[in-house]
Length: 254
Ligand SMILES: Nc1ncnc2c1ncn2[C@@H]1O[C@H](COP(=O)(O)OP(=O)(O)O)[C@@H](O)[C@H]1O
Ligand SMILES: [Mg+2]
Image 1 (tube, protein in one colour):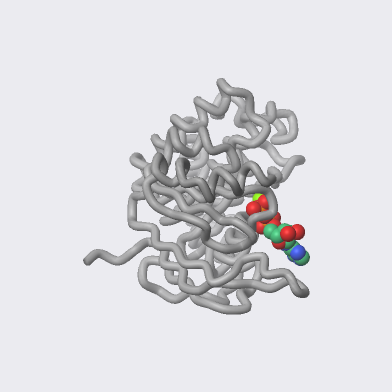
Image 2 (tube, rainbow, N blue to C red):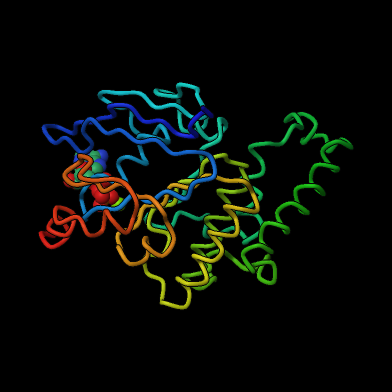
């Protein structure tokens, strides 16, 4: 059998006495657009913080493409191929739109610091290449027309898209999206979902999507897991999971 893109085994973290994530297991196959839902405070964002090295787990391990990457730093994990967006947008607000994407591209660049400082030919070539790559990425998100705008001057929906473009600039295998449609209007949301489907196919990605909205997730993910009080409540085909009485009760209890 082919290797899973992400394998999570018995993952857990305790804050004080609170089990924010407990004995959590999850398998995501290459090319999947997998959903993770659950009421507010269920532990969804904490799971992303564990998978990106922001928090060190109290228990458990996780594997990216077969490699155990538990305990690595956020930078190391990004280099291994996991990129994310945040529930609350984190852009470099005082930088231009295109420079925000270049920050992601910088992770991959080969020029040494000395070559950059001395502005040697390889550095120039890479600068040009980065400009091209950044523009191409912006185009996917229909942001190329605003490449020189300050990130903070973009409308909210476009800032969300820019954050995804920046994450993609690091060439991840696995993209983690934390409520990417939060705060968007219905039109922006629909457009975003189409873009997510497009990048999944076009860039051969695997995506784990956190979503609070059950309707939204059923429109885009074939399979989902449900977190509740840090624990797995249900998983499987989205349509079936959303009819599970325990899942409905968990959302009603919010
Ligand atoms: N750094 C932290 N210190 C203490 N408690 C935290 C920390 N991060 C998250 N929590 C707690 O963990 C629980 C899960 O939070 P979170 O993962 O943000 O939930 P969700 O994203 O599902 O809404 C909440 O009770 C939250 O208060
Ligand atoms: Mg959250």
